[in-house]
Image 1 (spheres, helix red, strand yellow):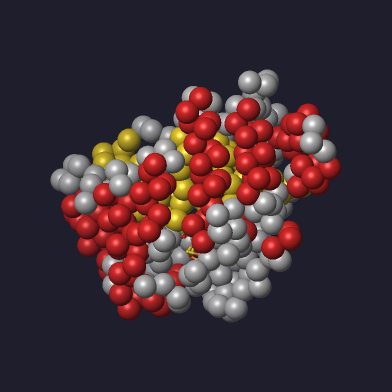
Image 2: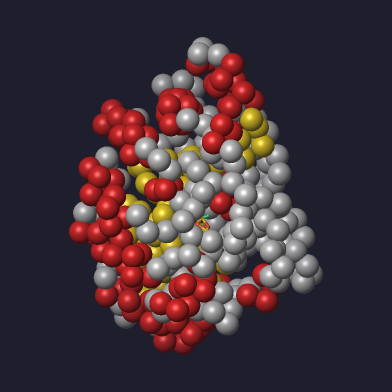
Length: 334
Ligand code: SAM
Ligand code: SF4
């Protein structure tokens, strides 16, 4: 292995999130507009280029790879990429290969993912109500996602559900979702809605449901035991004494995790974002395409990591979205 990647604030970079496509078969209201314009195919890294890039990161000390998007499983030939990453699990260079998915394709793909060494998967599900699900995702069908979740569990993968907390939308389902996940031995993580992309005419502040409030609601019914575990990301966890299940809270708008940040994000066009909340990025596609020499790419990666900022600066506090970044989560990879 090469000298590991350490940023200017002495944080080792061990976690890469890679977006393999900006496309999706859903159009979730908080994520995309209904008529999104997607990138032309020529802009995208090929599967071979994604392999080269991710393998270089693994060689430089990345131990955990999360594949995301857009919807990663709608990218044509994506299993070739998972197969390619499996070899790093086999050599022990990589500890974990995982993905975040909307679940729609899992009915047919879960077995193969498990066969590629995927042991855990995050599946996004904001509601258990069919009609609400259709409203939130615009194009999604709840039944298909529920089948996908079942297929993932049957394939032996540990499933974590991610739900965006939406005021006036899934507020009334809080306890139902908690019990539903607990009954299926799945952890559940709530995500605070983030000011990403253009707001598409919708005022996201209206839907903003603070996880502090959500947590207080939970505490009315359950005994919450704080868990010490941190992942280097914006999540904190509690265990519900009554169900034994784990609940996570992702509050991306807080700064309190930046000091332990161990991650960078790669877009499907080869842009490396060193921080989710900052505009600064490094183009890795140019060095990747310029030379077969791995050192060219490695140097570009080291130069980028040397620019990783200390933290981000989202701020909802003045009832306007300060520090808003203009890209959609489907671009950077949520
Ligand atoms: N398509 C996959 C999925 O939905 O899980 C992976 C990509 S998606 C961008 C990753 C996560 O970002 C999802 O859990 C989604 O709910 C979340 N997300 C998207 N837009 C968001 C926003 N504006 N605020 C908070 N979370 C958001
Ligand atoms: Fe697609 Fe995921 Fe964005 Fe929903 S949140 S539109 S499923 S990328």
